[in-house]
Length: 114
Image 1 (tube, rainbow, N blue to C red):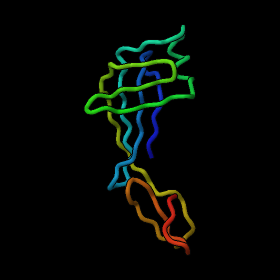
Image 2 (image 1 turned 180 degrees about the vertical axis):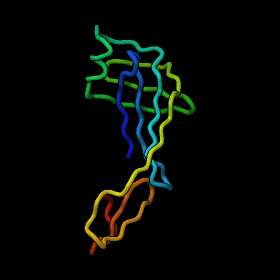
Image 3 (image 1 turned 90 degrees about the vertical axis):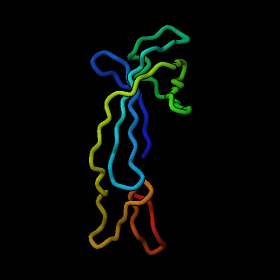
Image 4 (image 1 turned 60 degrees about the horizontal axis):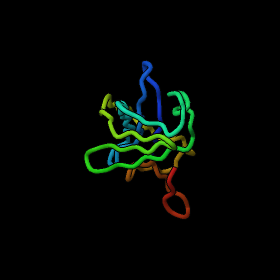
């Protein structure tokens, strides 16, 4: 799992990045506080949060995000939250394994990502 979106917490803009750990079933959520953003057109924070065309990219140790018509180059890593990432329900007796950041089940045709 690798999911990124814009959220507002306490009236401030954050980039929320949810991803699973590679070797163990843990969902990790990281929050990056946006210190500076520039809009190419008039907008509010809510306009940015509701924009569905979001693209992100990473460079070295810095986090750069490209958000539709907005660009930010100043963010600060904030809170990191970890929680269990349980296996989705499968038919009783189905073999499952957590591998490479995702749950898999054994089928007649081999392993299938859940």
